Image (cartoon, rainbow, N blue to C red):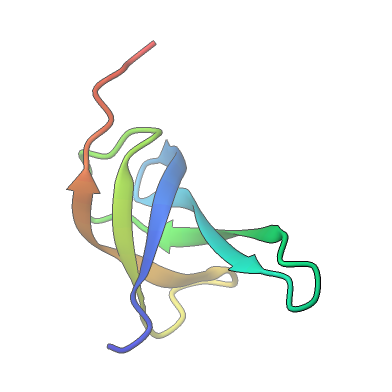
Length: 82
């Protein structure tokens, strides 16, 4: 699909994960960086995710009230576990 997004995993709970997508743009007049963050509830069928991982997500038909994306692939694994 066309709307693949790159996101950072915030939390994982079974087959569901919460991810955060960050979009950086510049203000038209003042040229200041604007950081927009949006959180999504996604379907986690990979099972091997942890907080801090970088993933790509893609839209799917709704699986529940708030779950409208699924994890497409893992880009970067977070190795620093606390």
